[in-house]
Structures are given as C-alpha cells and as structure tokens.
Image 1 (cartoon, rainbow, N blue to C red):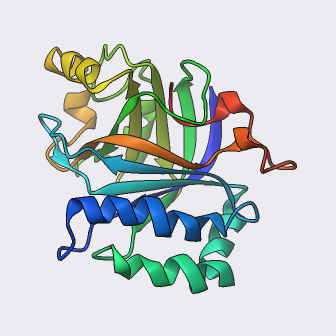
Image 2 (cartoon, one colour):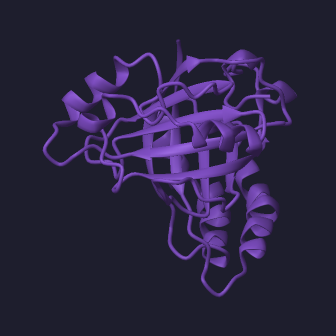
Amino acid sequence: MRSGTKIVGMLDRRRDLSIAHFHQHWRGPHALEALKLAPEFIVQYVQNHSLHIPIPGFEEACDGCPVVWVHDAEAAAGMSRSDAYRTGAWIDEPRFMEFRSRGFVGHEEVVDPGPRMLRFPCSVKAMFFLKRPETLSRDDFLAGWRALPHPLVHAAPEARRYVRTIPDDPDAWFDGLEELWWRDIAGFQAAWSNRVRPEAAAALLDEAASRAMLVEENRVVWPEEGVFVAKRVNPGDAPGAD
C-alpha cells in the first residue's frame, strides 16, 4: 500500500454558464494558471470532470473535483499564499466557479494499485465522498473503514484500481474519499447494477449524506513528463488507472 499527501477540492460551476463552458474553461485557461504553480508547489494535478451521469443511491457531489498532490503540508499552505496563485488561479476562479473551491488536505492510501499509470487515461473513475453517521465517532469510522479489504460502497466492485483518502482535519466536510476506476462507463454501470453492499456500510456509512460522481480525468501535471527531478513521483504511484 503506497501513500501520499494531496489536496481535494469540489467545484460548482457558475449558474449563468453552461456545463460545457464550465468544463472548457477549467480545462483551458484555468489549467494554464495552475501550471504556474509547478514544480515549486505541485507534484501532480488531476482535474476530475463530472460526466453528470447519476450513480444510483447517491446525490451528485459537484461539477468538478481538482486533486493536487504536493511535496508536503508546508507546500500545501504556501501555495495558497504564493504570488503565482494570488495573481493567477485565484483571480480566474470566479470566472467559471459559483463559489471558491471547498477542499481539504488528506493522506492518500493506494489499496489496489491496478495497472501501470500513464499520462493519458483510458478509463473512467467513480468518486465517493463518504460521511459517517452522526452517532459514530471519527476514530471508529476510520478504524472500521480501513479494516475493510474492499471499498465501503461496494464489497465486490471488480474495479481496476482502488484508492482511499483520509482528511487530515477531523472537521473536514467529508470523512473520507473512495476512488474506483473502471475500464469504461458500461463496465461501471454493470458493476453498480449488481452492487454488493458491504455489511459494514450499515454501521459506518450515512449514504444519504454522502455524495458521488462519475468522472473523466484530465491529468494536467503528470510526473512521467519528466518535469520534476528531486520530488519526482514514481509512475506506479501516480493516480488514475489505464
């Protein structure tokens, strides 16, 4: 099991913009602003664009989820204060986002690495933002979740890759994130139609308060391109699945 530190965000499009305009701006002008933060702060950066395909049993999380891998916690804090961010991405955000990104710094655990990671994804990913019942302590939730050999949302998903992320802040807006990769949409939908709910989910998961989204990855900053030297991440540790 490999691990790493990353920042997870949630973006909502400006309501006066079309969904297509939101995704186009995020992929284009905003991605260029984010590139100014690499490699000083950003090790990897993946845009998760919602496909706006419902996942039965869960409300859609948002329109997009940026995931940024950083060198360490100090880099995560310094990035938001940097001139490159304040004069670039910070100014651009209101041009396509309804609100500033909601986010948390978390610790990633790669439970099932799946196939070797490449620059251009040829798979789809489901993201599940988990919320525990109010009667359950965070410590008990994390202990029960991490003890499972499979995801909390599906006991036999047949996914190609499984990663979970634990927020560092106990008051984060969700208690955990599960990311599951499939070869294609049809494969996910077939697996989900035969979903096996884990027995532990009844005690650990508030499904009504949790959120989910099926996404397409846009891997903006990727270590295989050789941009980074001292902090380069091994290709096998990269997020996503191909």
